[in-house]
Length: 124
Image 1 (cartoon, rainbow, N blue to C red):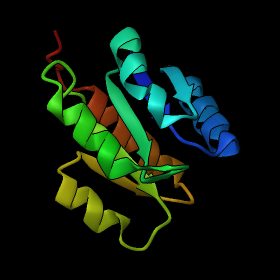
Image 2 (image 1 turned 180 degrees about the vertical axis):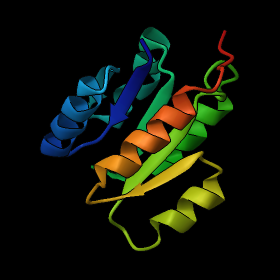
Image 3 (image 1 turned 90 degrees about the horizontal axis):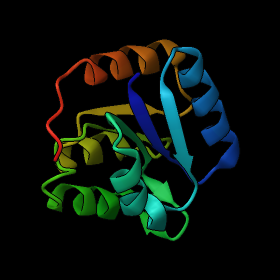
Image 4 (image 1 turned 135 degrees about the vertical axis):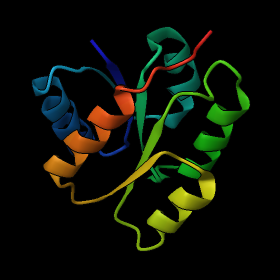
C-alpha cells in the first residue's frame, strides 16, 4: 500500500483529501502543522507528499527546501497544492513533481497521485 503524507493546515481540506485518497486504497497521514513534517516523514516514510503552499505561519517553499536538503527525503515526490494565482509558477521554480489548484479536481488528483506513486522510490 502506497503512503501519502498530507501537509495542509485547513482541517476540512485535509480531511477531504484523506478520505478521497483512502477510498482509492492509499495509506494517508495528514498533519496540520508544518513544524511536524520532518519528524513525520522520518517515521511514516511516505511515497508522496501533498503540500499546501500557504500554511499558517510557514511558507511551503521553506518546507520543500527542508525536504530536499535531506538526502534520505529528497527523492520523495511532492505535489504542491494552492489556490494562489502564482502557485503553479512557484511549483515549477521549486522543482516539485506536480501542482494541483484548489478547489481540487478529484480526477486530476487521482491521476497525478497514481502516476507519482508508481515510480520506484529510493529512500534510506
